[in-house]
Image 1 (tube, helix red, strand yellow):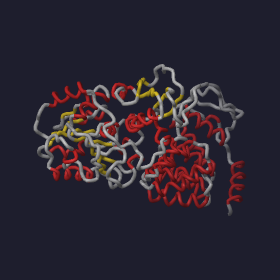
Image 2 (cartoon, helix red, strand yellow; image 1 turned 180 degrees about the horizontal axis):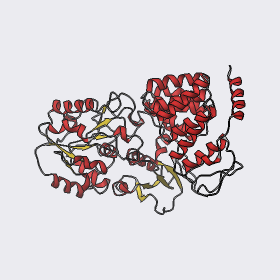
Image 3 (tube, rainbow, N blue to C red; image 1 turned 90 degrees about the horizontal axis):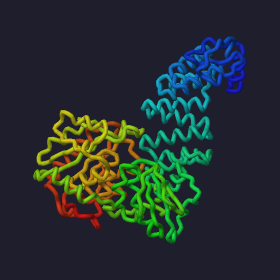
Image 4 (cartoon, rainbow, N blue to C red; image 1 turned 180 degrees about the vertical axis):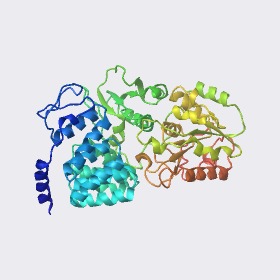
Length: 514
């Protein structure tokens, strides 16, 4: 039976099926007898009469919106069981289960769709998403390929396939699918953002940053946005809508804006106000959310690389471009004392709100092999809930003593080395020119690109990558071996002469660490 005949038969079957009755509406969610979903989902009224499959689906959507996922699951499961041969019911069940995070059950629902209709492209796309969410990458990729063959012009399918390939560490393979998604849906930011991420991860910086300018969220003001031309003394507001690491990485462009004649007002997140108050070129630094002083034009910090036509050879690489407060540095030097040991700061976890934090953060216990290396003193530079992992370990965690990133900058500045996962501390250390070893998950964030052991953004940084997801033990072994091999001596004057600066570092212009 071909697809058209199958769907015609399904419509006939659906008409003949007994429809679920309204008394199946539960948990304070009701529909009227004429199949109209009530505006007030908490209304309590007697309901009678049959309820159509469509209304049952809308009722489940109302349950999800009302924060009652189990109710929604039960309603859709009832529909799918009552109509086991209905593509509509199975697709609705799979989609709802996917939203609820039950990817095992979603896989079963979408699998049923592909059995009912082996040429159902959207069903295969759903199945591939469920497999990807469960970590079955090989099956997910094969299923996506089948879906693309059946429905090459499904923009969301191409988009999801591209995202999965990027997350699997294959951004170059993702780019053709994401280009197709953008061609099919050129005004949708999600497709542009995914293409931008894949391009940047693949090292295609110029095009990647051009695409990133579509992604936003960019603000609207009465003043016009900056178009990149000479500012001729006008005041420009530069604002940041993303994370602390993004601000630390890209504030290096502020002096370039000044060179184009701009007077810069820089709006930043609260932990950065004091630190970036010393950023060269920023005439005024204001806290995000506070009233803004007058300005003539505006731009997002994240759009600056595209404004300046970024290529691997034009990234501003001079470090340090940030400086710690001298008084705080003196305080931290006194607190740490003179131990005669090489002092290394450890940061093992990022912000829990980051969607990739479960992958990028490492349990402190996994770093335990480092702490037994002779001649090395390890201190924690860890704030937040993960700081509690230091309890009971032979590690002095200084994180709870840090108020904001100005305090952190001062501490980092007196360390010999920082070893960190991908979080703001790593960006801060890199911006300060402090030797930094970055522990990277697989997949990792776009800015670290693929395979390389150095960063085009931070000359003092070395990258240690996972070979497979969540496998931290081999990474820690490599780090421990490198520390032991280099036989560190405490505090060095010239990083160009220190064994802590391997040959990949461009020594020209590097600051002295004192």
